[in-house]
Image 1 (cartoon, helix red, strand yellow):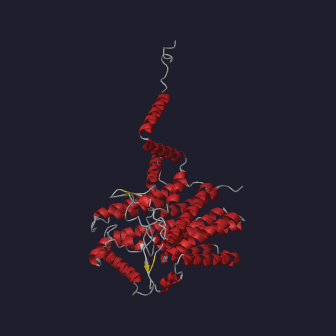
Image 2 (cartoon, helix red, strand yellow):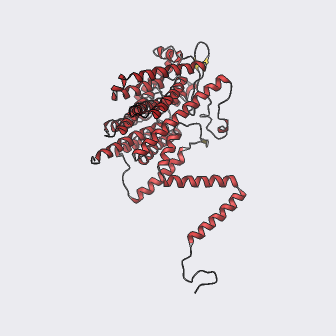
Image 3 (tube, helix red, strand yellow):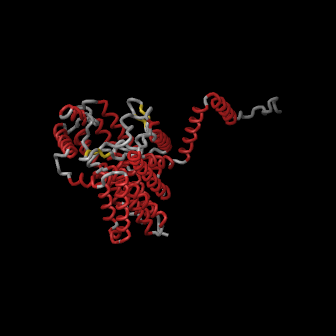
Length: 482
């Protein structure tokens, strides 16, 4: 017997339909009263659903965002970047999966080295001039670990790896193009600064162009694209150019002329922007990465097409610099004067390097506290440079976290490089990707011997792609041959 409402007595109440109806009514009411917040909320929910259903989208988003620093939200005590919500979602998904099947995360040795690096950072508190600066640096190390693990876990198939590498090439080209547009704006007289970011962005990161380099005729402004420093942009471009060069060679050998031509154009754009950064560390990084690449693929050096393309690209890059009013010989003169300790930049680099060694000798077990190098330098050497850094990533962790922190840092990178170098994929494409990413890691390490941005997102995305390539190569090698 049916009741007056049409629901059979004792039947189960359709809670799913009721919930869907209630949510629909609430959405209609919210959209009518607050349309913009409602649209943003719906977009966020839809994005979360998409990321949960397709976890590789998280890695893809990290690849696209890894060249960004200026888009952020400043809370006064903490700066939120767009990738942080993605990492929080990835951590939640990972924890949920771990509850279902508790196990160590992949790459146990590297993960333990990461945790040791963070722990030694916490141990650096005793002599810290500002304890409040230690914890944010430890959080950055933890964020680097979360970034690395997220990409390693989600880039779990060959097609996904190749998609991630293609996205990296595209994103790096776009960032480089924007850096060139910055310089065109200086010459043509139009403003390229992203003013709409100013109300909520960290003021220390909201910079339109890079620091000026003094020369006899005046000041030369340096491109920095979406980074806050031209040297960091140069390191990013050096790693991307190294990988793109390797992939371009591989695609040319396979007869994929369209892809190889597009990658040659990308190298031209990135090379032009690299010259406009006027960064010695960036150029050295690219040279080191290319040297590692050709050491692994020496036969490529015997191909005339490579040298013709390199010569044409160099002429075009110099032409772009001249068109923008940038002296292309300035970078060469900076290299020529690298041993001149009378030059301000060289003298400052030497002074902070020696001071870092002195701090290590004075505080060998705990260091002076992560993030405290500048405070010690400012109080003991130059009060105008309380934000000074060691300009050398390994020395930073030896000076700020003592021998334990420095050793943990070096151990982590030895494990990373060894993990990628020892992999020998049978698949030619995977092996090319492995060599490309290994050379990119070497380029990043070389750049960080003259600067320090080792905790930036792009460093750990590239490191994760390298390890993911090694894992995929091993998995393919374990399968029986057809």
